Image (cartoon, rainbow, N blue to C red):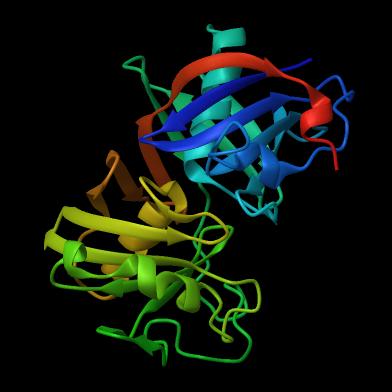
Length: 274
């Protein structure tokens, strides 16, 4: 039997497996993530050993595809390392997008230093040279998005009312827009004030999600670049609110929010082997 934790960050939920011992067999991640025939989650997260950080975090979307980064998952993994070593004020996590650092304020929230955003077309990456602040993309009422990389590719549309956008219908096609060779996370953002943004996200490989940490970071960066907000804002998603700050001295984006353990369990590996 293989032990697991079910965790979430503002409803963006994960099955977390600890493979720091290196004994985890090859498993079908999409089956584990299936909400009807598996455990059910947006992403399966694997903790592995790292030569560069306290832990390596491997991430598989609900469709089984591996992705580079996940902000909410990083807070969950950081909180687990903190439980193991509560005296630590900071921990580091290696991802396919690089090493990020978490710090703990003592109020149950985790602050992740997500690094500097990518704003050049090669950083996203895009298929061809484009103005990342005004992409030539439109679908339904959505048009003129901003492209941002937070270690993974995002397009952010600004709208008057996020609740009026049929993102479940538009998301699948936009995710696979040919300008994004690695597909895209699709955000629709409503700027309520200079320090408040409302956001919904269609997540690449997972669909509509209650929260997306990198999406919240991308929305703040995109909003500032368009002159719509300052460099610090509360970003409210369907599952709750994250505090996002684009720090001036090093160009890094900080994301602060909670992480929670829902339950723990065990599964028979024969049910999910490849």
